[in-house]
Image 1: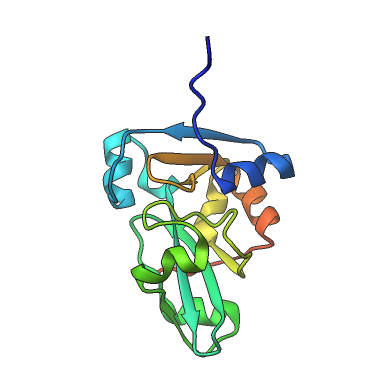
Image 2: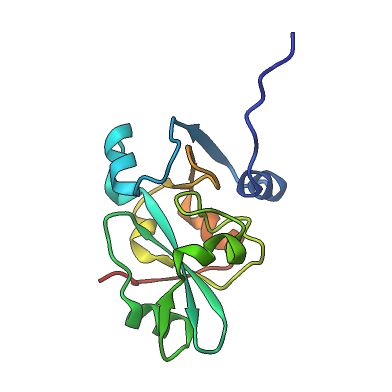
Length: 160
């Protein structure tokens, strides 16, 4: 009898290859639902659930910011964290082309290219945080210190 194997995302493969301890959670989701609603649906604390936002700068560079799902990215703090004058959120239509992921499934791990990444400092309050698993209906639970080390991420305050 063949096993029904769940597909692995680039993020899951990258974490496994790097030996980063993590857990995967799968849930039913056919279309984009914001992280707050997903956390509420799954009974997860908002402060431990993190979203991934991608920005672009006039220089043409892209940057990744990981912050709590209920918070808003402070674009001035974000720009300062990456040494740019300003950054703006990447348009939804460009997310897949730039990252390889879709809206709602975007995760900082395993993008097409490793972009400079900034993790909000609140992540370090927890032994484990929740990020997208790289596709709709998946989450990855991992230590924020492991995430920061894997991505060579800067850790600072980036929320409004």
